[in-house]
Length: 229
Figure 1 (cartoon, rainbow, N blue to C red):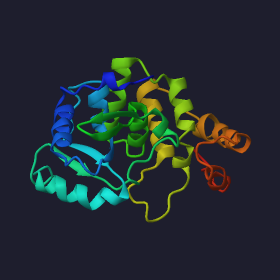
Figure 2 (tube, rainbow, N blue to C red; figure 1 turned 120 degrees about the vertical axis):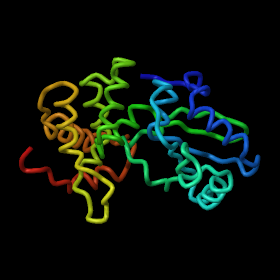
Figure 3 (tube, rainbow, N blue to C red; figure 1 turned 45 degrees about the vertical axis):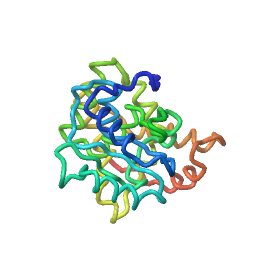
């Protein structure tokens, strides 16, 4: 599905908070901020889909400034019931080409990049708590998408997330198990994750020189698939 800047619900709780935040930022330097997580679903899909925070990140150079500014504005978790969470730029993991679908809009002199709801769903699949399942159900109920086939194709773009995680990657869940569980919940069926997602993505990465991530082929070449599902 195609989302555009005109679809952003600035009147929603997240929209109003971000608008106020953008207005309060100093005009220079111009910041490049990416908004992800549940806020994107609220802004594009359903204004009633609420979350306690808005996840965003900027460049590495703006990290300290954003932390200090959000604190000074009283928008941290400790100071606000609806807070802004300044995240590390590496915190958001989704399909390799997610930036190509993100919606960009200037607000009060700063650039805001809103992650596409489907890419937010992929990031939620890494955890798949009850509220993450509800996000999938909501997007499907409101838009009819992604269909089962569309989600399979989208997850093929996120195949890197299926590689075995390193010991220090404690924040990542079991994508393999979570994907199978999601299919049971949404479509009441088992999914052959290796056959439908991993193998087709691996085959395409070998033959497609235009892969959005040049290092993907090398990393996936050593990906060890689970012996059993």
